[in-house]
Length: 152
Image (cartoon, rainbow, N blue to C red; front, side):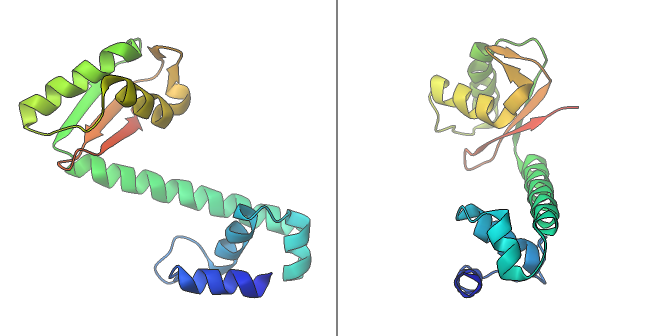
């Protein structure tokens, strides 16, 4: 099991020097993504299940921080940024984005229903039903990629 994970990490080019994850965190995540139980991982690594749980939790937190950092960097580069206030009907968001993209000369490769789903999925709990519950910033890169950030 550990040999398979080491092979996988090598194959995908994991480098702890350039990653936000430690080698142990990468091992644990790789195994958990393959539905290996924490108890089985603990046995294979010669540690406790509680330690594996802690390592997994830290790894997932690091991955989320890395995602947030990438989203932040993309938002800085995005030529289109649309502020969507709390209380906005989700059905109004596509037109807001399309108008801003037209003004900036950026093409969005999403139909209105697709764009609503992208925004809703990315916003998570910031969208409740059809209503934007928390302010959002919808960024669109010059390549047309849509990124959604919560505005706190």
